[in-house]
Amino acid sequence: MSRDNPIIELRGVGKTFQSSDGEVVALKDINISIDEGDIFGVIGMSGAGKSTLVRCVNLLERPTEGSVWFDGQELTGMSPRELRNARRSISMIFQQFNLLMQSTCLKNICFPMEIAGIKAADAKKRAEELLEIVGLPDKANAYPAQLSGGQKQRIAIARALASDPKVLMCDEATSALDPTTTRSILELIKDINKRLGITAIIITHEMSVIEEICSRVAILDGGHVAEIGRVEEIFSNPQTEAAKKLVYPNGSPVTHLKSERVVRIAFNGGTSYDPLIASLAIDCGVKVNILGADTRNVGGKAFGTMLIGLPNDNDAAEKALAYIRRQKDISCEEVEYSHD
Amino acid sequence: MTELFTSPAWTEALLILKSETLTAIWETLYSTVLATAFAYLIGLPLGVLLVTGETDGIRPLPKPLMAVMNFVVNILRSVPFLILMIVAIPLTRAILGTAIGTKAMIPPLVFAAFPFVSRLVETSLRETDKGVIEAAQSMGATPFQIVYKVMLPEAKPSLISGATTAFITILGYGAMAGAIGGGGLGNLAITYGYYKFKAIIMWAAVIMIVILVQIFQSVGTRLAVKSDKRIN
Image 1: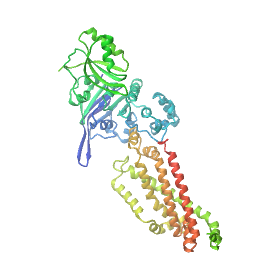
Image 2 (image 1 turned 60 degrees about the vertical axis):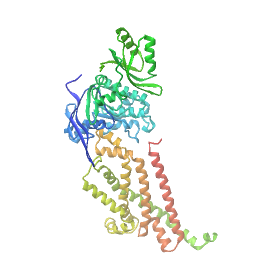
Image 3 (image 1 turned 180 degrees about the vertical axis):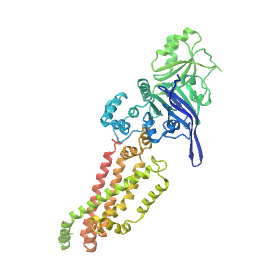
Image 4 (image 1 turned 90 degrees about the vertical axis):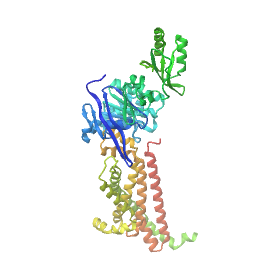
């Protein structure tokens, strides 16, 4: 997993704000290194310092301690001009989209190219390609006010891609969107990551977002990194209080029903979760234990996760696993699970 | 009532209005347009600096400089226009060689209007969404690019409304300036109506000013609404 050159590296980053009633420590001793091509998640409750952290990466907020490195260069040591150039390689999308409301979609996408001094005709051509990539080729002359939230975020993504970035930072990019739209935007980000090799940094307070697309995650709590590692490791076996609170928001899972093999299922907006457990029993004759669940029913669709203990009989367990894997809108993986 | 329209006073007033009105309207428009243009030439950049130069602005300026700019704007805005016109007489004479006539109205109008314009611009630019500015910064835009490619275009409808207010205020000031040796409709109202006791001419001039204000206000409002792409 780890490569020689991380694309983004935060070394001992700290940020202290001066306010009228003293100092406020927003970030403390943050050490994060993100590999090229990765999808890295940062999760935390509100006030944990997520937004400050992401703004320290492109120095919209200047860290008061430590250094920030991008592609082998130290951003914190750059002149304003060098920093502006480097920022073109680190794009950003936002919760409130932050589009130019008085400009057409096409002009919005042309904007980063315009400020980089690219010829208007070339910029227009590239913007039209990008509209194609984000699936809105017919919205070139529409104004942002005429679009839905999901469409606005697609335009924002097209704009973010216009400068051929190496990194795409998503600051709560799906938090203002409904679950279905959230999924389609996450799909798009995943697709961009795969097709264009752009490293993505996902800032969110929603577990489901991390589960859906991230490979590594840092859990932020009170301005410091509580846990960092691969998503499945952290989610299956959270060590710290902060991590446990995020993974099991409704308290610890029931653990008295012991199983050898445990599967974590993520519901991504299928019809409902109840029939899955029932039909497992009916169609396969396999009974499973629900060890923990955090699911929500949104407009008749199921979202969230469930921990399921498979039967100790290996054949039955495999049968159940295969059955679950065949289901639409459900992703699953086997996880380490401690019975303490 | 009908006696009024056949009275010698009425006939005389009509004759004067016939020969003077067009020139007066022309002088009013000409001085207002030029004064507004010059007021924006100074007031627009000043208004931009008042916003961008703040401590948390996109290009902070030294605090003493900001204090001086704010002080100048406030002082000029608090001096009554009538006083400002008289104070400006030597300056007008130095610039134009005369302190009387339509042209001579322009320097005091600009002096009175540019601080007002800078505050209007400041208010409009403060409405710009902070997130959009942040987005532009994250793309590597320079402060200058943020001003002329983000803040000004985003504030366009509000800037148009402000310009309408400025234009009408300057038109009103111009009518006042007519009283002390300027030209235009204000001069017509004062010299004939007030000094020569021809009330009909005074009222005719006032009505024409009212009509001009109405026209410019509705044109300005329509332009502002039409240019706003957030509401269609």
